[in-house]
Length: 299
Image: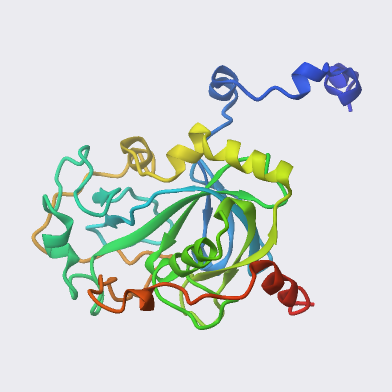
């Protein structure tokens, strides 16, 4: 290494600089701090920064800590057919799943529930053209102090129910953790690809508790601008998906973009009027005991 870089050897760096984070100026000039996300395309965990794939995992599992999330399930709609390799912004989307974002020039409808793109059969086969999506902000379990990633879960990875508490869709998993009396950001979560699914689908299970120090870091991460922006879609994100992509007019009916990460539609969740307990996870034994039981399963 050149002697010109001796300045950056750790022994030469003052303590106050070692603990300092990159400021907005440095991020802007150095190209750091861009949107980071974990993609599930091709049944691989892919790390993507500013739309460019940086690396992909060789494993079907990834350990994360969930640091933020929105209470809503968002929606997104593509009017055109998917072309391999393209990265187009949605033609219509909703962060709260109820009304289109105010920035959309040609919304499909003023109310998502009444939209024709929300009718079964408007998409491929018996599916809906407008897709559900749950957005989370996560950090890697082995780098809790590191970058915050956006994780957008398709409906198959969010809705549904499993009798196997080692492989739950995220909605069931989050309820399960809450039912045990723990915060989700206190736990290392294993995210695993479902080998039985034809398309990218992940399941979740708890692995271990964070230390007190790690939990403090996770809580701080939840309040960062990166964690807050990761859970919503903004006009900037949509416009920068592909700046050269033309805007599509709102069609009365149109072929639907077949998303790479989600080819199947699951039933829209229905709010039940009775048997409320049936939608909640059944009481389980102590979570720590369960994680101890699992510790020998995957050797």
